[in-house]
Figure (cartoon, rainbow, N blue to C red):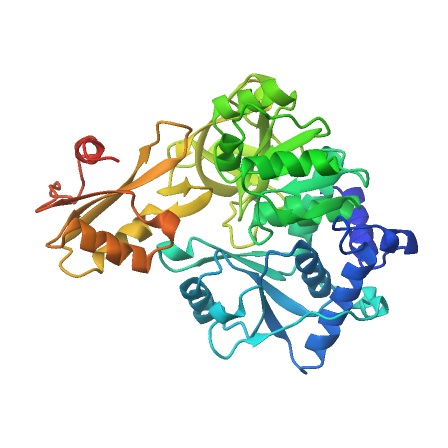
Length: 461
């Protein structure tokens, strides 16, 4: 950020906790919470936690966007540290509880929470309780996000107010989001993409959002047309579902996609039927948003955000590195402040880059991050398993992955799959499994990947 941008950010940061009377009267969720009621809810959460007499760590196990926004505001005003889970399943929440010891939660389904965790019921308070002199240091972490917990030890990435709000303000400005916009979403607010695009960016734009999360194609189309929605926040699997004959969304002016590569044919179909070129967002929990592309640009390359610096580096000269105010502090930085991503890339014309694939064994399945090495390590702990290789196989449609496992063990395939289902989140369970008596390796412990792929592909569903 330049000095002017930094000052602007600090002013915005203070202003976000001092809403005008006019803003308080506007709707945040369509025919639901006004902005004023969201601020009142934030004030109530802060007061409630302050009455406990000590700092609390609050886990947000909710899909309610108004409650999520209120919790963010309360935390910015100094109420608590926040945790966003990667899943609401009981074993995922147990893993996170063991990692952080969070002691309170706001939960849609409190029965899934570990014992001893206090369930908080948000109540309204007075907006004056959100005092700007108590706001958090903009560069100190206040929010922890978990990724990949089902595939091994949960990975934690923290975000500071600057990380999140600078990105939200940037998105609002870059895509000219205004109070005249109405957002419809197919993603929950507890992942970074949903949090930024379906809660924070609309909030700083003073726009409206539909409170529900829509997943079926006719639901999405009907919601857009019934309410005149102008912005769609979705993911590749839902754009594939929208490959239907009656796709018509006249009020829509912009559509976003993230959490995985969007099929070119799905993007082309959407563009043909609606005239809207879906804007793909490239980034991750830890990096924040990095770049965009759209089918309307007629290129596979990505255009970096103009506030993100980038270079191609690494030992093999192919690793994409970025420098950004959006990146989590846990990312390792070189002497120039660049963070190495998990992707390989090459430079393209006009300051753009092409992604060449993952460099670290992490793949996306149904928009979720899965670490293949950690899946492999978990399967190794199962009874009679002597060796295992977990790889990703290309799908016939789109560019996401199918997880496949070659396992040397004495179990039946049915028994092995049952055990894997019990220890992994559904999206991390290998879809293609082949049991063998032995996996051939070189003296150095290497495998012949092409031979492994042949074995697994011959048995793929």
